[in-house]
Amino acid sequence: MLSGESAGFGRRFAALIYDSIVIAAPLIFYTWAAVFLAHGRPLLRDAVGGWADLYHLGLLAIIAGYFVLNWIHSGQTVGMRAWRLHAVGLDGRRPTLAAAASRFFWSLIAWAPAGLGVLWLLVDAERLALQDRMSDTRIVYLPRDSGAG
Image (cartoon, rainbow, N blue to C red; front, side, top):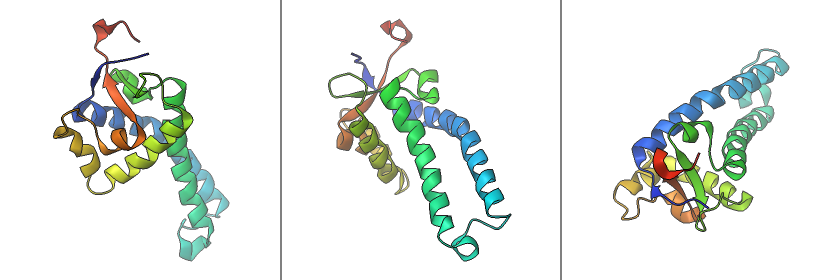
């Protein structure tokens, strides 16, 4: 069981940058394979029809899989490990599959309007963002002397 202070925006954003670099490789490989299967045609609805929608769903599934599976397995993504962040449920344990999936969904909503749902944590008394509140999870920062990780 983990407890710590809610992570601030800076650490969360830095972890997201790290994770973006890590997830770029599978997304590039997936896109390469999709373009190959489309015989070099652009992956747009006008060029490949409904396959374009399937391609976009695949991109989303890869990204969701990366975050959700890491959160339920260890409570951390690669970027979160670098910044000593952990995703936890209200009980201080790793999120369940349902909570992690909910967190991912609400994260998409929170970032969509110029990141306003995430920036909310700058004014929230508990430093919780939209996805924290809506999924009953939170991101905690564990300093090195905390004994964890």
